[in-house]
Length: 287
Image 1 (cartoon, helix red, strand yellow):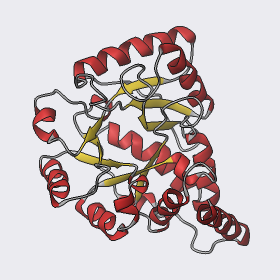
Image 2: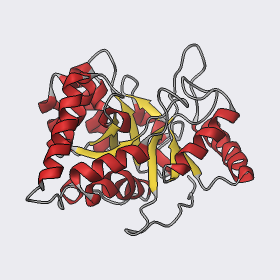
Image 3: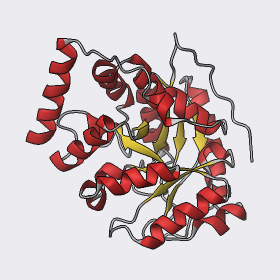
């Protein structure tokens, strides 16, 4: 386990941390070469991102499973190239862990990677086939073992779109929900995905917004755009918490209280704020 240096951030200078990306080149369905990764790093820095976590899929196609050692090595090499180019951004190691595999033994043996190599928080992904009692049990085992669990992009899974009370139950268990930035941006996601993302925001169930960027076009880093939109719709405090404060706390092994994320929403919304939110929600319904 290594201590990775994060650029200092303050309320006046809320440098964002993208907690879910596929910037590590040539290992999964994300970026395929170092040149693309360098361009993505530049784009992320231009959006106001100071650090991002490389969270490749552990299993992809017929390739052997990625190990923590391989991820660390790839991140070291990528940071060297980013530094040579002078881009003000740091890549931290991590991975996206499938819940279909029992992750706890692999994590305890150091074979799989926590977010930022902190040994505290893990990013997990639900099976696309559906949710089962085994899935809940796996999350519970991770929580009981002392891990902080972040569930990747629940709004994109049909079984969660049809069952928001299930996500409420998981949040009550202590799971943090990570919504994808593009799911909040009009025209970037399907109506079902966008509608679910906004329902989770309205119910104040979201702890983190991250880009889950995979390429330079369709699934790029748009975290800065999403932060601006959240700021207009939910206020500066919520935008800062979802894109800066909570990601930083997770990487530092600090406790995250969901109530604190959403505590400063204005009680009385101005007319323009209501209009903005109504337009955004209508666009999610219309696609």
